Image 1 (cartoon, rainbow, N blue to C red):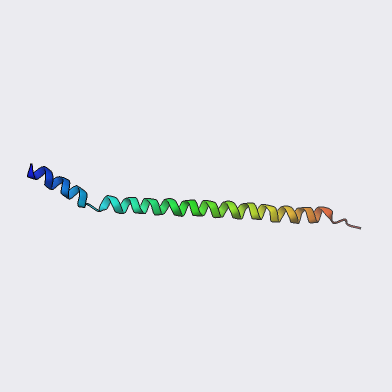
Image 2: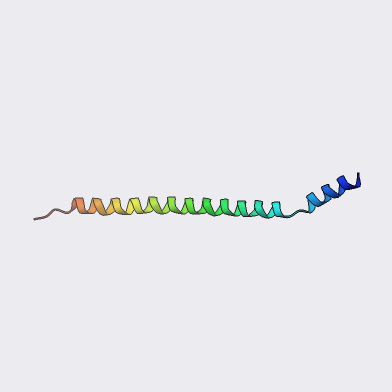
Length: 62
């Protein structure tokens, strides 16, 4: 019985799994941030180049 309790105690005190979970959560947060930033930047660039294209389309050459 003591051996089983010692194994349970060692499992609860083990911190390797906690560290792996923290790194996983951090990597997920970074990925979401990169995707959000790229999406916002992509939409802004699309509108910018559409405006430039419309401006050139409105220009008439003699």
